[in-house]
Length: 228
Image (cartoon, rainbow, N blue to C red):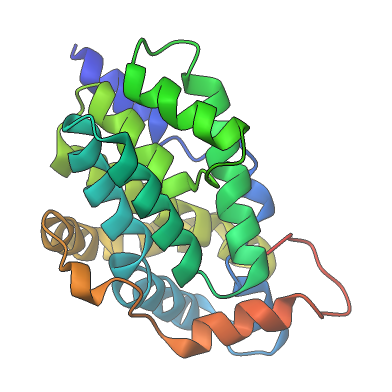
């Protein structure tokens, strides 16, 4: 069994104890407004989030951070982290990304013998940079010698599973509905992974304004189960 495969399974595990379960990425707003209310609208939400949002933000940063980590360029990593912070307009989404990234680094830094990871972690600890989740994910995948395409597949899978799990809880849906949704988006994940191998830097930050607005509205919901 490949050690890289085991590393990928651990890194992309939705149950990794970094707090991902407490964030809905704005889905809670959509559900409370009645815009996501069944299996069909849940699939639309997941599909659009992956293809129109993550592709041009977090997935692109994972891809670029992976390449920069391989090149051992800490200054370029810090620049990517700053850019990532700039394109996340909703406050709760910035905070969520920073918290998840910090916790991910805390788990892996003690077990990965890597100068570039240690430098990045030190920059986060000393408040030089924010330490966003997607940047940390890309670095950790690279230093563990996980193939880039497989790392991106794992990243998209992790994001999709988080949205599907939240849909099952919030709408609510049956567990079978959740699995059916996952089966249906496998071709999309494969397509997006290929597209993210060499992201267009000029397209970073392109996303659907509606997602940002719903994330901002989440801050003022009367009742909330999720932090974002």
